[in-house]
Image (cartoon, rainbow, N blue to C red):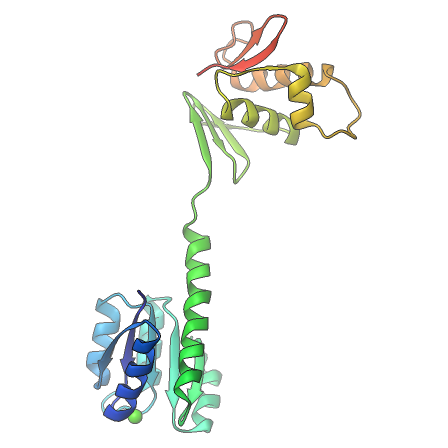
Length: 229
Ligand code: CA
């Protein structure tokens, strides 16, 4: 459940915002004081902040700036004056959105949802891990299309990479040259199954210590190739 912190000195407004956001399934906490609001914003984990601009002890500009220096959490600024919105934009404090009072609770909820969804997509894409295949000394990063052999990065052409990856993804499985050709090269490709042999040779030169005695890609005579597990 997403957790939201509202920093707002007007108790009625804060309660109203809280009620509507809770009805939409959010967990909401309120802080009526700017200093304490900032301290909580920095020390606890929230998914979004709703900051009132005019607070008695510390204004929303300052809070926004301080939060933004340390966190990427979405910040929605609330102000009673339209002019202030222009001022906030002009200052480039890093707020994600601005809303003027009075606003409808449904508008607030819609904006909160939109910012949370956007932020989650952002977080999701940045922490998504690359797909890695590791078999003994070979490490293949499928996402980045990079290969390391005993810690040393090796350069592969597109088809060499595809072929090595395909074999490594199916270890101990023997594939005929025909099967590999169909799998890696599309039907329009110019070439024949001899292409497979050429590519296997190139791959071996990069991954094998001794190409005469392959440790990774074995030749199964009369059948095809197999990636040794
Ligand atoms: Ca206020």
